[in-house]
Length: 271
Image 1 (cartoon, rainbow, N blue to C red):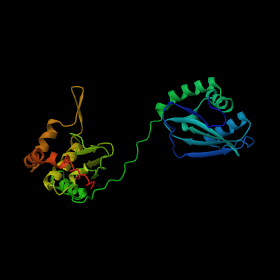
Image 2 (image 1 turned 90 degrees about the horizontal axis):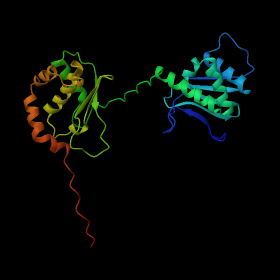
Image 3 (image 1 turned 180 degrees about the horizontal axis):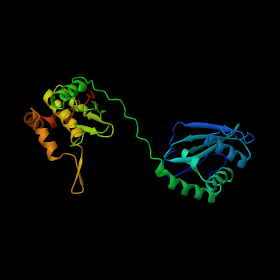
Image 4 (image 1 turned 180 degrees about the vertical axis):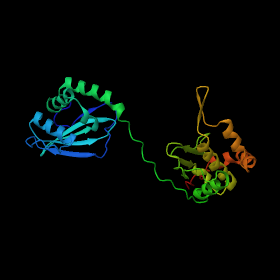
């Protein structure tokens, strides 16, 4: 257990830094404060812990997926950050909370870990908010391309946001994904290397068209394997007017655009 000089915290996993999220609710209840029918569950728990420990307890509730419980002594009392799962804890678990926070009890720690492992699946991590996409590039406006293709080939039935993907931090590989469609977010991202005057408009149109098809033809399970490109998908892909031209350009020119190496400058004249 940690010494009193450092914050006490109970983690589900031992490795990695504790996750930091903004508190959802704050409850500061003095142990002498009278119980009211208007008390929130967090207030009831804070008052109960205050009575067990003998000094005020401030509860900060969160939805962390790593650090479930931590505390820090402050002038006003004990500041306790805990996962909101503890609001539904039974009497035995609440008693273990008091023992762990007050006496660093190892038995209570094991009991709380068991409670966390049982309850955590009921509180899945919320999906991360999608970052806004940048559709306007230096040479191509993906939103204009998407809108035109949606009207021409999809009767405006495709609902998705579209934009350029972030520039990869790693060096170019021998293969990469020119586009990606995320079903959950309904988001299309196109590789930024295609935002180049060397890439013809019909090819950018084709890549966007390909990703739009992923919304119309959702992935299927075939022979216990996830199939992203079904026969129907491939048939509609070939219906794109510039399909043959796009395939020919891709075979002849794409690698030159994507993987061209910048020539090294000549060595400096040492004189």
